[in-house]
Length: 262
Image (tube, rainbow, N blue to C red):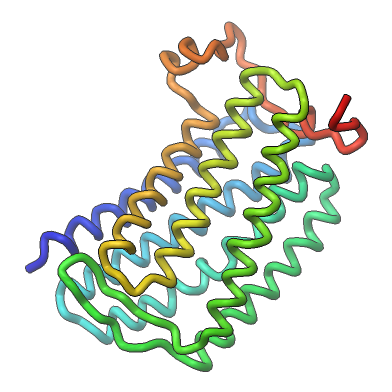
């Protein structure tokens, strides 16, 4: 019996619950939706749904490790790899849509990252993974293919992170309202937290580091929720409260026709 594994299971379930809640609330919050925000909101829902599915399955994998069921642990690992492989697709769609406002360009870019995901899965299933190493804190599984790790390192970390940094630079170069600054910056920071620490979660061979990475993924999901739905006390403190709710439109802030130095 391992209290560390129980903590790990709890964190994984918490990530799944917060992510699903965020996706569900966005889906039902009609004031957020208009013709310009629909593409990015749909991609955002897909992104957090994939995060939720990945960590829900990971929670079940930790339960399998807790019960010493190695075969189930391995099987669930391969299943969880499928949603994990495609997290970068809605992510880059959101980033490209914010930068360009062009749905076609966003789709084509998403397709490229979909191919990244397919290549990753093909190498993973072809080369396989080592048997889990169960410790007090976690169950670690290492992939046999360094190429697969490098593909996902590029697809999930390097390119999306560069895009996020580019968008954040644009935010500070332009004069934007406090609400827009809060919303966009916190959303991008939360996404960066999630993708960066999910990558660490996947490649680390240190159990405590994996647990810490999952804690930061959980923090990222909470920050994402707060980026859209900050509590009233936080709104008052930051000076972003509104008497009448107005849906936030990302494209008002990042119009590609406007000079960033204007």
